[in-house]
Image 1 (cartoon, rainbow, N blue to C red):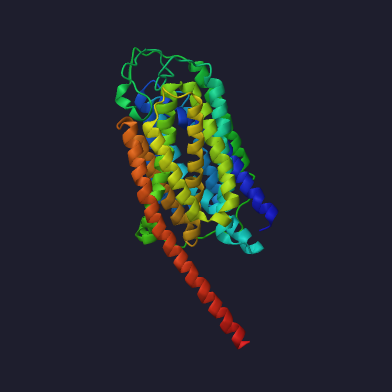
Image 2 (cartoon, rainbow, N blue to C red):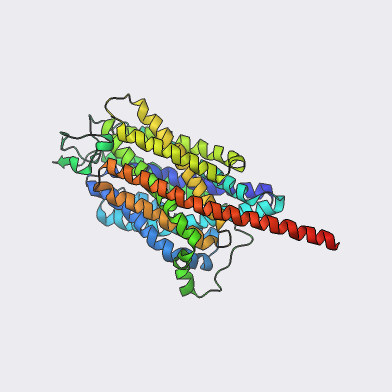
Length: 458
């Protein structure tokens, strides 16, 4: 595969996902603060990631064996415009089916995406004699540059539209309502608890603004689908359709017996937990609670900007630093940020602190997203379909856990859970890294001895 075609396909896929998530991410960011029914937002997000768990277990390997990657990818992304359409009339009867469909197809889509990027990176590395590990990591970093850039554009559009919505104090959970809101004893930040919000006497308002926003987001999804058609099909694809379909269906679960994969489960779940915290808790308990729902988009622009440019930065430094050093840096940075969230009095500091915190969230998130993908691509290059299905399975589990307890636990409790989970995750990942480096060193030494034997024979 030539450099031109390789980078063309990488950019096409990245731009397609950019438009899809320029629509989905801002919608996700305001789901917990958008609807008249306070449970609908978290219910929607929980349904997306819970159905994603089910999909990861059974669907990707079977469907990949039946369809070409490009065909399957395009089919799966049609769920995005359907989800946006459901938000035009946000009721349980519309949101829930669309959320389930998005979760089922999204797991397949992301598995296809990961396999596609890994294969074009590996093929290009073989052609150019580049180190595969660093090139795979670089390609994922480039992809996540575009992915995170969608935060900037999508949230910029969202904020521009929602700027017309002004509320005095607490804006969580009542964009569509104008009731009397009990703000007594409401504390923002780490001390925020969902049970502290009471909404009464609600009436529908701002429907025209919501329709305007949803129309723009719908157009983004359609553009993303159109761009995906220009992606080249892979010349060589991993064929698994020789296996019986029933075995393919359960192959993901079977691979959970692999000790290396089991050791990576915590860091993969954490990947979903920390993103769920940003999208569900930081936007609601910190930003919307303190500054207003119209500020959510602006803060998430900062998040996306940091994640976007740091993802690109990672792509260039990873061949010198290595993945492990980046993960350790991410752990200390994330623990420091969570400690700040615990002690931060949101009423005592100026508003620009909210944007700085969003920037810090973006930096750490870019590490977890790009490098966790790269870890699976590098460690399990011979089992890409099953490995990436497992990755999406447990990442979706993390999202689901975060959104399910979103309406139950106080924010401080969620922060402590995140911190503990991160420490355990990095400890278990360190074991995997040690084993991988040990095996890799053994292979290198063995190859050197084999080469010497060949020279001696000649």
